[in-house]
Length: 196
Image 1 (cartoon, helix red, strand yellow):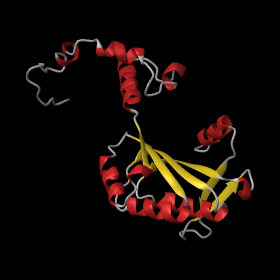
Image 2 (tube, rainbow, N blue to C red; image 1 turned 30 degrees about the horizontal axis):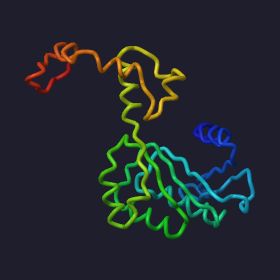
Image 3 (cartoon, one colour; image 1 turned 90 degrees about the vertical axis):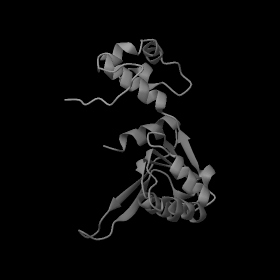
């Protein structure tokens, strides 16, 4: 199920497709990464690794090492929706840059990246983390859900940070009092609200 989107992306970009499959030869044993590719390793000069999140970067390291063995000349780029980058992830990223040809990672700002940027800076890799701003996209989705509108419209799915979102712009014109009086708040005296 998780391969449909990356495969579609590869088709749209008119490029090859490589899948890293983790399997366990023995039940409970250590997992191994098997590379399945639609092109020969000599033809691979760059790989975009797509994942849902980067946490400690252990899985990313395993995939990068397997790709390095498969196509040692390939430059690696890693993309994920959520970048937790917890623990010693910055040390793991440094190792991948030095040994596997990892050029950069890209994550969204669905999670604050200031701590990750500080830790990567401490090992000289601040420029290796690219942060994609999705705040406007998330705000647009929240407003649409609140208004009972669909978030599955082709126009909404095609929004980018520089696009004008008419629904979001219109929502900004709604007086704040319309929402605050419903919750029992007053604009001048904000306080916590307990929901039943």
